[in-house]
Image (spheres, rainbow, N blue to C red):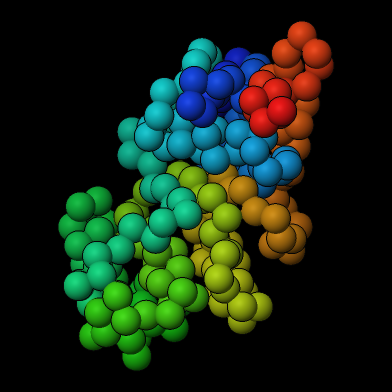
Length: 204
Protein backbone atom coordinates (compact mmCIF):
# COMPACT_ATOMS: atom_id res chain seq x y z
CA UNK A 1 0.00 0.00 0.00
CA UNK A 2 2.78 2.46 0.93
CA UNK A 3 6.57 2.33 0.77
CA UNK A 4 8.73 5.22 1.99
CA UNK A 5 12.43 4.83 1.20
CA UNK A 6 15.36 7.01 2.36
CA UNK A 7 13.10 10.06 2.47
CA UNK A 8 14.23 13.54 3.46
CA UNK A 9 11.64 16.28 3.96
CA UNK A 10 11.92 20.02 4.47
CA UNK A 11 9.85 23.03 5.45
CA UNK A 12 10.73 26.54 4.28
CA UNK A 13 13.90 25.23 2.64
CA UNK A 14 15.09 23.69 5.92
CA UNK A 15 15.56 19.90 6.04
CA UNK A 16 13.80 18.42 9.06
CA UNK A 17 13.87 14.63 8.56
CA UNK A 18 16.44 12.45 6.78
CA UNK A 19 16.54 8.80 5.78
CA UNK A 20 12.94 7.96 6.71
CA UNK A 21 12.10 4.33 5.85
CA UNK A 22 8.89 2.42 6.48
CA UNK A 23 6.24 0.40 4.70
CA UNK A 24 2.54 -0.09 5.23
CA UNK A 25 0.32 -2.90 3.96
CA UNK A 26 -3.42 -3.11 3.47
CA UNK A 27 -5.19 -3.52 6.80
CA UNK A 28 -2.54 -1.65 8.78
CA UNK A 29 -2.46 1.61 10.76
CA UNK A 30 0.79 3.46 11.35
CA UNK A 31 0.91 6.17 14.03
CA UNK A 32 3.80 8.63 13.70
CA UNK A 33 5.19 10.13 16.89
CA UNK A 34 7.63 12.93 17.59
CA UNK A 35 8.02 16.38 19.10
CA UNK A 36 6.36 19.48 17.69
CA UNK A 37 8.40 20.93 14.83
CA UNK A 38 10.05 17.60 14.05
CA UNK A 39 8.54 17.39 10.55
CA UNK A 40 5.56 15.06 10.94
CA UNK A 41 3.19 17.28 8.98
CA UNK A 42 5.75 17.85 6.23
CA UNK A 43 6.21 14.09 5.93
CA UNK A 44 2.46 13.52 5.66
CA UNK A 45 2.18 16.23 3.00
CA UNK A 46 4.88 14.48 0.98
CA UNK A 47 3.06 11.15 1.23
CA UNK A 48 -0.18 12.83 0.13
CA UNK A 49 1.56 14.40 -2.86
CA UNK A 50 1.11 17.98 -1.62
CA UNK A 51 4.83 18.75 -1.52
CA UNK A 52 7.98 17.18 -2.90
CA UNK A 53 10.56 15.49 -0.69
CA UNK A 54 14.15 16.67 -0.69
CA UNK A 55 15.23 13.18 -1.68
CA UNK A 56 14.08 9.58 -1.48
CA UNK A 57 11.12 7.72 -2.91
CA UNK A 58 7.45 7.24 -2.07
CA UNK A 59 5.42 4.44 -3.61
CA UNK A 60 1.72 4.98 -2.90
CA UNK A 61 -1.68 4.59 -4.58
CA UNK A 62 -2.42 7.08 -7.33
CA UNK A 63 -5.11 8.72 -5.19
CA UNK A 64 -4.63 9.33 -1.46
CA UNK A 65 -7.16 10.93 0.93
CA UNK A 66 -5.56 13.60 3.14
CA UNK A 67 -6.93 15.22 6.29
CA UNK A 68 -4.89 18.11 7.62
CA UNK A 69 -5.39 20.94 10.09
CA UNK A 70 -7.98 22.53 7.78
CA UNK A 71 -11.19 20.56 7.33
CA UNK A 72 -11.51 21.07 3.57
CA UNK A 73 -15.08 22.37 3.73
CA UNK A 74 -17.11 24.90 1.74
CA UNK A 75 -18.84 27.09 4.34
CA UNK A 76 -21.75 28.11 2.12
CA UNK A 77 -22.59 24.49 1.29
CA UNK A 78 -24.58 22.25 3.60
CA UNK A 79 -23.14 19.19 5.33
CA UNK A 80 -24.74 16.92 2.73
CA UNK A 81 -23.65 19.11 -0.17
CA UNK A 82 -20.06 19.07 1.07
CA UNK A 83 -20.02 15.29 1.24
CA UNK A 84 -21.73 14.94 -2.13
CA UNK A 85 -19.15 17.32 -3.65
CA UNK A 86 -16.20 15.28 -2.39
CA UNK A 87 -17.84 12.01 -3.38
CA UNK A 88 -18.20 13.36 -6.93
CA UNK A 89 -14.58 14.55 -7.00
CA UNK A 90 -13.26 11.16 -5.92
CA UNK A 91 -16.02 9.11 -7.60
CA UNK A 92 -16.55 7.66 -4.14
CA UNK A 93 -19.51 6.13 -2.30
CA UNK A 94 -22.76 7.81 -1.31
CA UNK A 95 -22.60 10.22 1.66
CA UNK A 96 -25.28 8.25 3.55
CA UNK A 97 -22.91 5.96 5.43
CA UNK A 98 -20.62 8.85 6.35
CA UNK A 99 -23.54 10.89 7.71
CA UNK A 100 -24.49 8.04 10.02
CA UNK A 101 -20.91 7.16 11.00
CA UNK A 102 -20.31 10.61 12.48
CA UNK A 103 -23.83 11.40 13.75
CA UNK A 104 -24.27 14.09 11.09
CA UNK A 105 -27.70 13.07 9.81
CA UNK A 106 -29.52 15.75 11.85
CA UNK A 107 -27.10 18.37 10.53
CA UNK A 108 -27.34 17.37 6.87
CA UNK A 109 -29.07 20.60 5.78
CA UNK A 110 -26.99 22.98 7.91
CA UNK A 111 -24.36 25.16 6.15
CA UNK A 112 -20.87 24.13 7.14
CA UNK A 113 -20.11 27.71 8.21
CA UNK A 114 -22.69 27.35 10.99
CA UNK A 115 -21.15 24.23 12.52
CA UNK A 116 -19.18 24.13 15.76
CA UNK A 117 -15.46 23.28 15.66
CA UNK A 118 -16.18 19.69 16.64
CA UNK A 119 -18.94 19.32 14.05
CA UNK A 120 -16.66 20.71 11.34
CA UNK A 121 -14.00 18.21 12.32
CA UNK A 122 -16.49 15.34 12.11
CA UNK A 123 -17.58 16.52 8.67
CA UNK A 124 -13.95 16.81 7.58
CA UNK A 125 -13.35 13.22 8.69
CA UNK A 126 -16.54 12.05 6.98
CA UNK A 127 -15.01 13.44 3.80
CA UNK A 128 -12.38 10.69 4.03
CA UNK A 129 -15.08 8.03 3.93
CA UNK A 130 -16.71 9.35 0.76
CA UNK A 131 -13.33 9.53 -1.00
CA UNK A 132 -13.28 5.79 -1.49
CA UNK A 133 -9.46 5.95 -1.22
CA UNK A 134 -7.66 2.96 0.23
CA UNK A 135 -4.91 5.03 1.88
CA UNK A 136 -5.83 7.70 4.43
CA UNK A 137 -3.17 10.21 5.53
CA UNK A 138 -4.33 12.07 8.64
CA UNK A 139 -2.69 14.88 10.63
CA UNK A 140 -4.10 15.13 14.19
CA UNK A 141 -7.57 13.89 13.15
CA UNK A 142 -9.07 14.01 16.65
CA UNK A 143 -8.50 17.74 17.29
CA UNK A 144 -11.74 19.37 18.60
CA UNK A 145 -13.38 15.98 19.21
CA UNK A 146 -14.71 14.88 22.60
CA UNK A 147 -14.36 11.29 23.84
CA UNK A 148 -17.63 10.16 22.23
CA UNK A 149 -16.63 11.44 18.80
CA UNK A 150 -13.10 10.07 19.11
CA UNK A 151 -14.81 6.69 19.57
CA UNK A 152 -16.83 7.29 16.40
CA UNK A 153 -13.63 8.07 14.50
CA UNK A 154 -11.95 4.96 15.91
CA UNK A 155 -14.87 2.80 14.75
CA UNK A 156 -14.73 4.27 11.23
CA UNK A 157 -10.97 3.75 11.08
CA UNK A 158 -11.37 0.15 12.26
CA UNK A 159 -13.91 -0.56 9.50
CA UNK A 160 -11.67 1.08 6.93
CA UNK A 161 -8.65 -1.09 7.63
CA UNK A 162 -10.71 -4.26 8.04
CA UNK A 163 -12.09 -3.69 4.54
CA UNK A 164 -8.57 -3.56 3.11
CA UNK A 165 -7.67 0.09 3.65
CA UNK A 166 -4.68 1.54 5.46
CA UNK A 167 -3.90 4.75 7.36
CA UNK A 168 -0.92 6.88 8.38
CA UNK A 169 -1.74 9.15 11.32
CA UNK A 170 -0.06 11.71 13.54
CA UNK A 171 -1.73 12.15 16.91
CA UNK A 172 -0.78 13.23 20.42
CA UNK A 173 -3.47 11.06 22.04
CA UNK A 174 -3.69 7.32 22.47
CA UNK A 175 -6.27 6.10 19.97
CA UNK A 176 -6.47 2.82 21.91
CA UNK A 177 -6.08 0.73 18.77
CA UNK A 178 -4.08 -2.33 19.82
CA UNK A 179 -3.17 -3.28 16.25
CA UNK A 180 -1.72 0.14 15.36
CA UNK A 181 2.01 0.28 14.73
CA UNK A 182 4.02 3.14 16.24
CA UNK A 183 6.98 4.87 14.61
CA UNK A 184 8.93 7.52 16.53
CA UNK A 185 10.44 9.86 13.94
CA UNK A 186 12.99 11.29 16.38
CA UNK A 187 15.72 9.00 15.08
CA UNK A 188 15.28 10.50 11.60
CA UNK A 189 15.76 14.09 12.80
CA UNK A 190 18.11 16.05 10.55
CA UNK A 191 21.27 17.04 12.40
CA UNK A 192 23.65 19.94 11.87
CA UNK A 193 27.28 20.12 12.84
CA UNK A 194 26.33 20.98 16.42
CA UNK A 195 24.17 17.88 16.74
CA UNK A 196 20.91 19.85 17.05
CA UNK A 197 18.21 19.70 14.41
CA UNK A 198 18.19 22.27 11.62
CA UNK A 199 14.79 23.45 12.84
CA UNK A 200 16.10 24.00 16.36
CA UNK A 201 19.14 25.86 15.02
CA UNK A 202 16.87 28.24 13.12
CA UNK A 203 15.02 29.10 16.33
CA UNK A 204 18.18 30.00 18.20
